[in-house]
Structures are given as C-alpha cells and as structure tokens.
Length: 196
Image 1 (cartoon, rainbow, N blue to C red):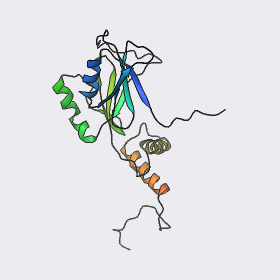
Image 2 (cartoon, helix red, strand yellow; image 1 turned 60 degrees about the vertical axis):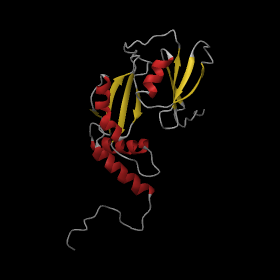
Image 3 (cartoon, rainbow, N blue to C red; image 1 turned 90 degrees about the vertical axis):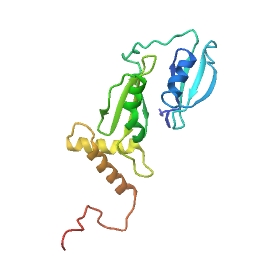
Image 4 (cartoon, rainbow, N blue to C red; image 1 turned 90 degrees about the horizontal axis):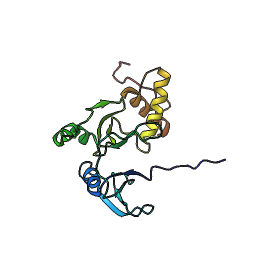
C-alpha cells in the first residue's frame, strides 16, 4: 500500500451567494485579485470565481445570483471547516484592527498564539476568516512547518504547555546547526567577552 503524497494546497472552494458579494469580500476586503471565472462545470447555473491569495494557490467560490448573503455563522460541527487562515505581513497585521474597525467589521482583536498573532472575523456569509502573522522567518531553505516541528520537539522535551518564541529561536538555531556546515569543531555557544 502506498500514500497519495500531497505537495501543497491546490485550491480551496467555498459556496458563495451572489457574484458581487464574493468579489467585494475576497478582492475588496482581503486584496486577493479576481483572476479567473467560468461556469461551475458540475452545476451550470452557478459561476466559479477564482481569487489569488498571494502564494500561487487559489481560493475559489461558487456563486449563484439567486442566493443572497446570510451572515448567520456557518456550521462548525464534525466534518465542517472551522475557518480559513491567511498569512499577512507584520506590517499589514499591525493595521488589521484599525482597518476592520473602519469598515465596521466585528473581530476578535489580536490573539497571541505563541508562534504567531491572529485576528478573526466573519465574511458576509458567516464564514470565519483568520489573518495570521508569523513571529519568525525560517532559515533559508527551510519552511515554517520545519521550524514548528523542531519547536514542538523542544517544547515537549521541556514540558512546556505551548510553543513560544524561545522554542522558535532554539528551533531555528538547531536547524541552522543541522543544515549548514562550519569549519569549527565545537559549535556550542561561547562567551567572547569573558577574560581568557
């Protein structure tokens, strides 16, 4: 038996209301360019809108002009999607509360997640959206997931409750030690200010 190995998210498709509501939210609020549209090839009376979230993947929305926006919270029981999180820069994240407030969009305020900061709000159809800003950059050639895996191992070994910035810093140091060579035989921390 073999796995069907994934290599990333190709796209995520949501059920929308009318076309303009989707364009106004995904492009007009979140800044995702509206890049492609065609009929829903499985349901001809629907349109299929494609938005570029900025990482080469796609967010797509099925729309139908007979459907009207309903801000009632979308289901969150087993098998449902709880929320979608989008990566934003620290600069954009610093503006998120003010920009949401100016639009009158209710939100969670900034949430400390240890390795990132988050803010949550609902789209016009009641779907929960998260804006997330990492607190770290992975070393060149490494991914955020690799740093989080290493930070998890460090956190568990120390018996800490959740990942914090110290785990991230130590994880980045460990990844650099493992992936980058050095002419030094001893790469342990040193104190060059100490009198010899």
